[in-house]
Length: 497
Image 1: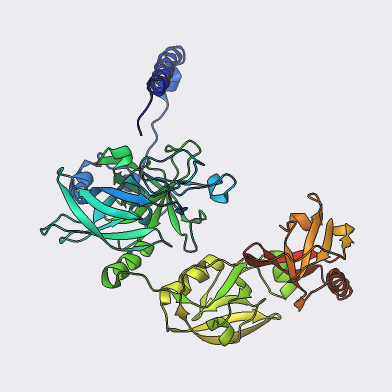
Image 2 (image 1 turned 135 degrees about the vertical axis):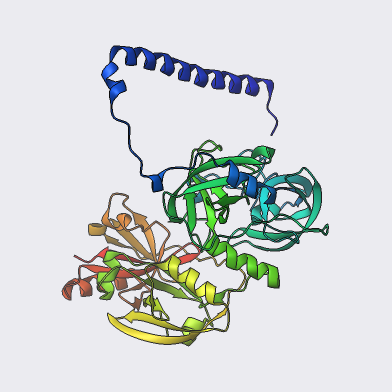
C-alpha cells in the first residue's frame, strides 16, 4: 500500500522518536550503574543447558527457507462479494461485526475498513505466503489468499516466478493447496509429527508486505485458541512477528518441521502486536491430504446445533457437571434425529471418548467423514443413554431467518426478571428487557423468541409464567428456556425463584 508524503513523514518521525527513546534509556542506564556499582555485581541468572536457546537460528533458516514461497494472486471482485476485500484476502467486516473486535486477517494490501463493496466487477491483486510440501511442487497456503483467484503465480526463494493452479480449497479451515505448473524438483518441508508445547521456540517465515524471505522468531504462547473464525477453530497462538502478507506461510519448530500455517493476527492497529494465530499441523495435515487426493474435504455431519453447558443449564437438566455439548436444535432429516436424539440432550462422548464442549464435538464428528457409524453417549433427564448414528455429509452452509410475527396483542411483565413478553408467530417474543435485570444477565435480548420453557412448547406469555411457577414449586433454582435469536437457537437458564 503506497504512502502519501505526509504518511511517510509521520512514519519517519515516529521511528526517530522511538530510536531517541532508546538512546535516552541507554544514557540513563550508564549513569545509574555508575552510582550503584553493587547492582553490577549481582550474580548472573543460571539457565539449565537443556533450556538454553540456540546460539543462532541461521542453520534452521538455511535448511527450510528454500521451501517458503511468495504467493501472488489476481482476483476478480463482483458486486455481491462480501467475504473478502481486494488485495490480500482480509474479510470485509462491517461496523459492529463481532469479529471486528477480536482479529483482523492479513495477506496483502487492503482497502480501508468499512469501504463500500464495488458495484461492478473489477480486478485486484493479493499477496500472501506459502510453503512447498513435495518435490513435485505442491504448495500450502490460506484459502483467503487465493479465493476468487483468476491467476496465481509463485515466487521461489531464488527469485524465479512460476505459474500455479489451485488444486482445492477449504473455507471452513481457511486452507488451500496449489500446484506449481512447471515440472521439476523443488525443495520442500514436512509437517511436524508432534505438536509444540506452550513455551517452545518457533520461527515464522513469509512474505510480509511483499518483503519475501522474512524470518521472525518467538514462542508458542498458547494452544487451542478459538478466535471465532469457524466451527473448527483450534489455533496456535505465537508471538513471532507476523503481518499482512504472512498469510499461508509456515511456522517451524527447531527441527525445521512445520507446526502451523500462519492465518490471522490480533491487531487494533493492523500491524503486529505479538499475537498471531496459526492453524496447527494436526488440523492442516488431514485437510491438505484430502485436498490433494480428492480436491475437496468431506466431513461427517449429525445435523444439530449445539452450545456449551453452563452450570445453571447443568442444574436445570439434572447433569452432574457442566461438560458436554447441549443440543439446542435439530435440522430436518438429520442423522441425529433419525437416531432418536432430541433438543435438550447433552452429548458427553463419541465412541467412548469424552466430550468437554461443542467445539470438540464439531471437530470430532467432522473428522470421521460421511457414512461412518459412531456411538453417541448423551444425557437426557439426568440419565445416561446411547445412540448409534450413521453420519451424513456436511451440507453447504445455509441461512435461516426467524420471523417475529405480527404486532403483539398480549403482554406479560415478569418484573422480578426485568422481562416483558409478548406472543409471536413461532413462540413468545422478548418485547422489553431491563438491561440491569436478571434476564438480561443471561444473554437474552429484545426480539429473542422463546420456543420452549421447561421442555414444553410455549405459545403465550402465560405459558412461560406457568413454567416458572412450576419450577419454583418443584424446588428448582432455574428454568431452562429454548430461545431463537436471529438465525440460531440456544438454551438459556433463568432464575425460577
